[in-house]
Length: 238
Image (cartoon, rainbow, N blue to C red; front, side, top):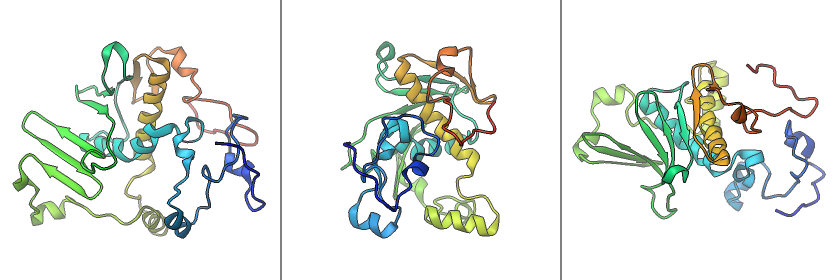
């Protein structure tokens, strides 16, 4: 995006926060007004998400939406895969993540006009389930019928909008639908998949210690750690 003069009512230095890359400059598509009516009118949901230095690209943008669903289904919230394999490595068709229990998750392209592709496919030895926003399909449709027991257990739960849930959590002092530990483990997956893609090789990861397994090159990657601009500090870093 071309550089555009910063509006008088925007503190772009604050917007940048700890980011250190001097090539990041202002453009209205990158950081539009955070006003929901404006977003509805313009359809511009900020392209900072698609740049690695500011939002970690498309893998993190949609990965943050869907990897957490996979994590929840696998009972791995707060943990994660132990190996990340980039697309193209030794003929690997899709970016791949492997869990210690043998489960494999792949990131695959989707078509905007195919809502059943813009979600997750759970494939097991007895059947499959597809889920997306407002969409669910199963190899056996009768399994999708709601029962009182399932509803009480939280099946097909419909949640409040993100911002409302956040405000409600502040007021109630209860965890939001996705607590910070869940969001953190999901975003770690996004970052590590991007690091593996840049290094063009697999990465071994220990989710318990939140660290690479004997990999100094990966530890030195800017998506894993970088020094913040003053006065920003990362206080809790292992």
